[in-house]
Image (cartoon, rainbow, N blue to C red; front, side, top):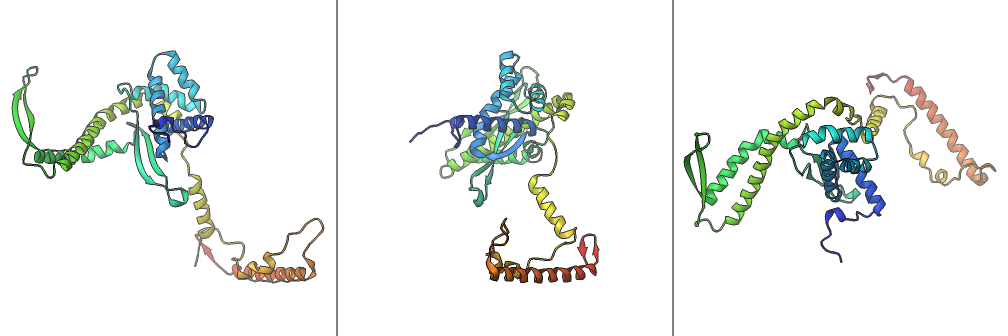
Length: 313
């Protein structure tokens, strides 16, 4: 048994060449779309490589830039201009951590029930963290102050800034000895709220700067934008809706007679004609004649049906 395998050294059930190809596809899609959905294992597997490629794109060394060109050998007309232009300017002040992984539940049982994750680039235009920060940062600050008030003795100290000569109020926290039974839960809540507040404050500062840098590369972003269209599942569902609600049917519905056991067992026609014997041939011919009569009767009935806006009335 092998313990302690790093997440970027996982096999993922693939050969080395297959892992390299998978990694290239995932990184390319993330750079173009800035948000993808995949399994949690693949998300952790690709995160390190995406951060490394963006760091190489920010570098002025030609060897680092050549590594980016060698790695992204697909869709270079969309990936490379976006990496060397907008993304390098967007993350100029950020040293690492250009991606964010969020868990998105589990896949259905029919697909294996694997954990699903959403990978996105930080400070993208429609980032959900920035929207949540604008709406809920005050609530999390109040919750953090309430938890710290239960966990510590809070003391406000009025000071004067030696540089600006302005009055500043500082907060000093000291441990309380009367909180014993719930100290572990309060510390866990304090850690959670402080992490959320820190993330929201950082997003409120970095997101407007990212929009200013993206405005300088508006033409490049427009050129490298992904194609917007309907997915294959959406198209198939739309076709099925049109068949039911818009287009009038051109054939009768399936009837029980079409699934006659004798007819279902008949072989198909071949070069030597029908190979089913005289008895089966008579059954098949009688079935075809009855079906033809029903189709003609249904066609006569369909002539008197009025169709308006795809609905029968």
